[in-house]
Length: 196
Image (cartoon, rainbow, N blue to C red; front, side, top):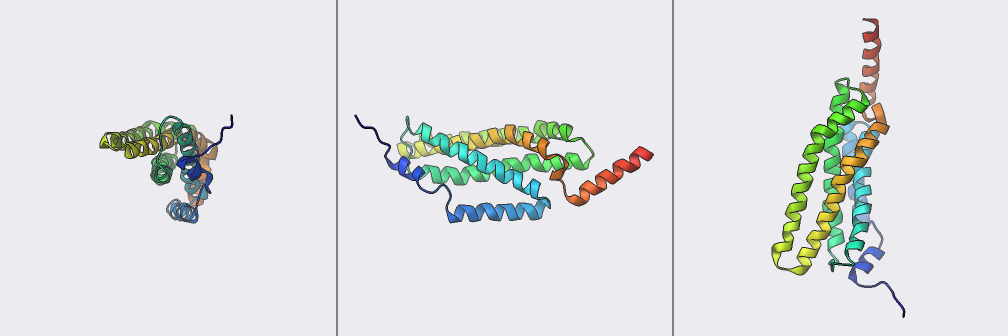
């Protein structure tokens, strides 16, 4: 008995994981985030979360393919939808965390409050997207339903990464997530507060 991998999904996953267009899109997102945030750490975290979620989510598709016939277009669509959702959900938390740090909260308190407020928005937004994409299962076309399962799985992984991995990374990043000017102002303000 000889067993070998094959099928459309096998060949889809055996290709290069990222093509030039995807890499260009990620680079463009990083540049835009860098211009918006003014901090490489703040710009990099949403992209890292998106890439991590994409890696785990698309890898999970190969496991799902053992039970469901995943069409060849599903990993590409899941990558596009998942990466966009992952970066977007991470932006919610990073932006709120930076706002709380600017108000003078400590890093752990800021991460906790960010997760309590924006984390709820991420959970509901991600849940809505997952349920909407799973609605493709009722299209009456099996290959569309299977594609919807694949896309919703990747979005679900993105939500979980934003709600679990990102807060840990925000805690590790500390004040480096703010602009350099804001860090100097914040430390100068703390020095004057001690004198007063």
